[in-house]
Image (spheres, rainbow, N blue to C red):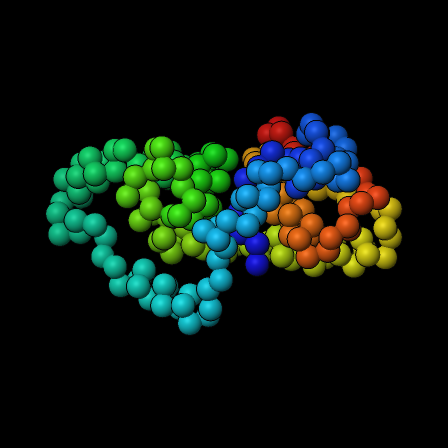
Length: 202
């Protein structure tokens, strides 16, 4: 199963594009896409038993500083998480949504977080059950989209392919679907146009 891969929309195909424009997949593949796609730290292959163990561990773990009053606990958590980019993204998403960049970073996993500004706390967050669940969801969505698309694409070599991403964002699911199709079905986009439409809020 493919793992989160954040590249420019033309990374799988090598074609320049704008939101809503055409992609020419036969113009070459970018080095960035190949590097990120093949990086072992991005892949998630977790068996059902391992998933169950993660869930049970998550349910058993107490809230940090659970023995302290709520106000004091909040102060301590704020102090220890002050340099964590992931914790900051999660904090800002309370009562709203997480930004596209923070969501992307959360999906990378602990081994692929940027070393320039990720710290040990970020990596602990990245191996937690919520973060792993987000990564698994991306893999499942990309796999299901690829499985759905391949039947139509195989029967019609020149048929175009359109991805519509509601609410904008980095379109990780669409990009991973493209990379997954490129990997498992070489040449599937040789004579095909691809449309990537990232809808803006409003």
